[in-house]
Length: 133
Image (cartoon, rainbow, N blue to C red; front, side, top):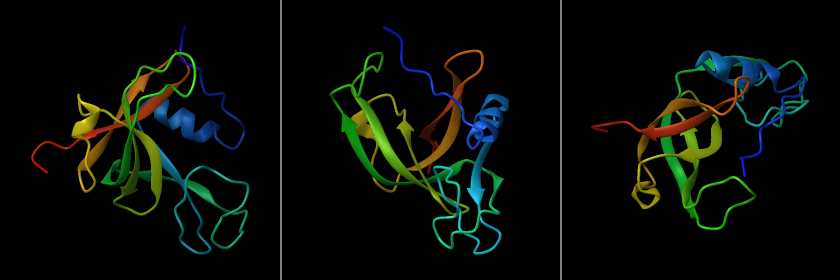
């Protein structure tokens, strides 16, 4: 059975388009400066609706991690490391971290984005360890 494929919405389409190009973008509010993820109709910090996507270098630090042993649905291979990443420019992402063995992913680990095509239209941002960090 294949993994579920995300369905872009008008709000998330720029994120998925950027990922397909190999770029990571995150919402940022120019009114208060907050970077946030997932995209929301209004900034969760100040409720401004004038936020926009901005580029991210795709580097960060594992803030928290859990190893998932029970698949959340059909098509997911377990076990996998699911982590909250503090991005260097600000903001956080909940994402998979692929370090080979999920038990090797640790809090404080430096990671970088790694894009992996799921379909011709959808590319998923994973994170991988930064060697030497």
